[in-house]
Amino acid sequence: MNLVLLGAGRIGRVHAASIARHPRARLQAVVDVDRPAAESLAAEYGAKVVDSAEAAVSGPGVEGVLVCTSTDTHVEMIELAARYEKPVFCEKPIDLDLKKVDACLQKVEKSGIALMIGFNRRFDPHFRALEQRLAAGEIGSLEMLRITSRDPEPPPMEYVKVSGGIFKDMTIHDFDMARFLLGEEPVELFATGSCLVDGEIGKAGDIDTSLVVMRTAGGKLCYIENSRRAIYGYDQRIEALGSGGMLQAGNPSPTTVTRLSEEAVTSDKPPYFFLERYAEAYRAELDEFIQVVAEGRAPAVDGRDGRAALALAEAATISNREARPVKMED
Image (cartoon, one colour):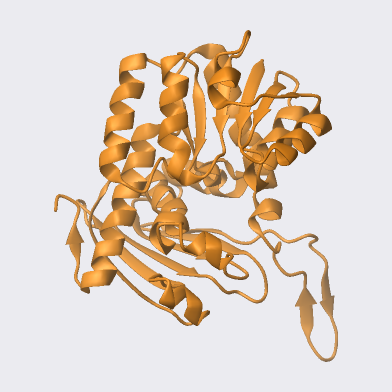
């Protein structure tokens, strides 16, 4: 299957490696405004460099497009793929503006192409196992959900300034995971945050430490906590409490070896960053996209999911700014 990669940055390289490992996929072309980056990536995986996204997408034999460019170009790239009727995978978020997302999704629907959004955590084997066991009724009816997501350190300030804020950049993954697990849409949320890690983030108008509480129509509660600093590593955990017990998904570690001594009991720290923590999830995510293209079916995570997570992120941004709960119909 011939795939085109738009964007040769960090996340583009992750997907290029996944394509190279997949027995049914081939990286045909790479496009990036940074031509040396595109040339380096293309040379590594035997692809060609194309000067424009349109030339790459409209090339002979192209069967799918992966959009890994900057967020402000996502809508343009998705609509380009739609014009040429190519299935497209796009990293989150679709855009930072809901109106632009709505207009984009209308064009996608009219074209009939499959649009998959890069919420890779749904494909993490630990979180997927939790969701499957939750759906199987192992803990009865879900009542409370707790999602912990902490980065080891803040992103560069240049990125913070264009990210759309912590809720649209970081928490958006957790909003999608909450929707994936709750089985009901949140109808109300309250978000609050502080700038405790880096004062420059506050000067840029963002926060680096946040809490979100959501309630569904059926009364289920979800609590999300985010921090841009966890000195011990990349902290990703989920806890689901139900009428018949609890399910937990903790942090995997490099080894299961524990040292017990007179002084202490010690074990390995979590992986340091998302590239290590979600390596398997990225591979499973690509496999899902390849199956979508091959079978002509809808993806497990589509544009509507991308829009719903962004709507929650927008509501959280308003809630934090105005210090009030926000109803999702507002």
